[in-house]
Length: 318
Image 1 (tube, rainbow, N blue to C red):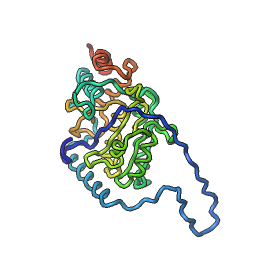
Image 2 (cartoon, rainbow, N blue to C red):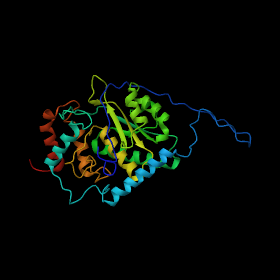
Image 3 (cartoon, rainbow, N blue to C red):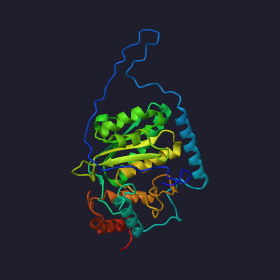
Image 4 (cartoon, rainbow, N blue to C red):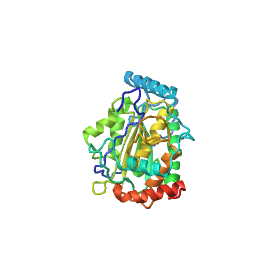
């Protein structure tokens, strides 16, 4: 990864190790009827009240705000999705898809292609907020996630939705700060109960250069058929960076797991030119969830099918 001034605002981290399926039981607290004007003691089982951020969390907020401003000043983090100056055709699309869907820059050191990975069943996203996140910010992040999930469902034709039920959740989206480590550890283990201590520590105490991250995969017998995922969005980020993290981490958790310097216009590129999902990226997701493909396919096996899909999407003669 490049130095902080030019590195990506998102950092992908995932694995396809065995993920055990678990469920949570939602609790319900009966607060009863207040009969006294004297405020009662705060129940011990409620979430802790928000406190002032620690010195480290405040420093990270300043750091990420300065980084975002630097990128914007340099004309990066565009939200227009591309234009006439960023053309691409069907051949660009199929080449970029292969590089982004079949390779993993943080996985194989050999640089060889892996298998196609995507969700085989419904994706049920749930936002979970650390105690440090304000009610106002929770409302904004929840609205962003709801709108994005609906957009992804329309694009892919795959069932992708937001749920408020912990028991139904299979893709958890955590919004948490450096001060929310205990909360993050507890939440991650509800979805990934077999996660190793070292991997869990990456979620709980991510290095400064890990701006956000995701882990998604399937059970050991079918690692390419995704069934569980967790994404972490740092609460210290300013608004655009938070939206950017949501867009890329969830899209990568759906199976577009790599970045490519040749992809343009795209969020799957470490140059940070684009902050939000582009028209090019929408088409990559359409290809990924096309019924002509299936989880576990190799790159050579999928290549002629991907080519056909790309030309169909672009409406270009072969």
